[in-house]
Length: 259
Ligand SMILES: Nc1ncnc2c1ncn2[C@@H]1O[C@H](COP(=O)(O)OP(=O)(O)OP(=O)(O)O)[C@@H](O)[C@H]1O
Image 1 (cartoon, protein in one colour):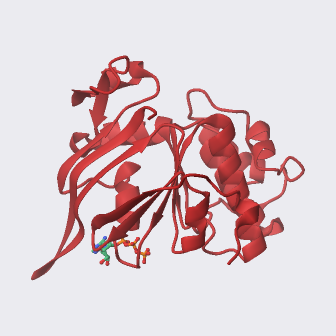
Image 2 (image 1 turned 180 degrees about the vertical axis):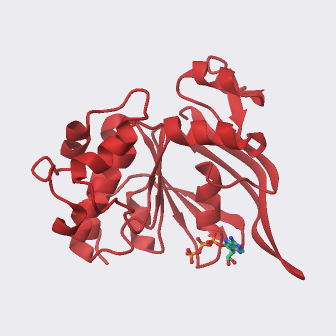
Image 3 (image 1 turned 90 degrees about the horizontal axis):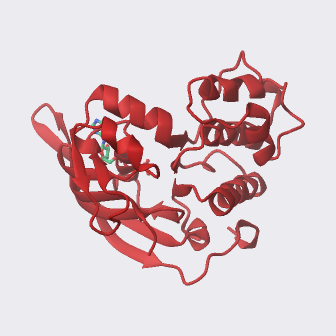
């Protein structure tokens, strides 16, 4: 089993709404490993986005712990809340994101996490190259924007604006932007949700290749059961808990998927 990247124990997230409290996560225990591709499935409202946002440091749990183990152990020395990873003594320190303050979460997001959302969130007045450069300008070890765009097959679209690109191409720019900072983890919330079948497959191929070639841990949220076939593991959420963890003996390539 490869190195643990995230270790969530008893993660809960409550939203007080007047008289009632919505329990988005009711105690999630989960590990994600280096270089794996995980697909998260579950009905609407089961807590997928809440979990992904907490893993990515966009939100904090109400209860529980979430240890993050950086690929470079020197990164953990910045943190106030450190824990040892008994499985990997060489990587001694984990950062407890559940106890991190806003400054620490910002640093975590900036240096370690790439996000891909359903709607690409590109800046319309900037070209593809400039949209990627926005992120690489503040990263520690970025890929040149041109290289990141070549990774997603857009080396011929560098100077196009979002309005001059198809939906699939815009999503690939968003993926280039996410991977250009060379994150440890790539967190994708419904990355194919707004795309037709063919374009969705193309985007999944890009995510699969980035995972395989760069060893970046990739987590993909989807409603589409079929996409689970391309994963190393499937995490099924139900009612704020992990209902099932499924290990796939073999990953299917995105071009083999049909829906
Ligand atoms: N900011 C918030 N305030 C109040 N309730 C919230 C908030 N965010 C999420 N919830 C609630 O928490 C529960 C889980 O939401 P979440 O978005 O994580 O589910 P999901 O599985 O991603 O759903 P979908 O597939 O529809 O995106 C839902 O009942 C939702 O209404």
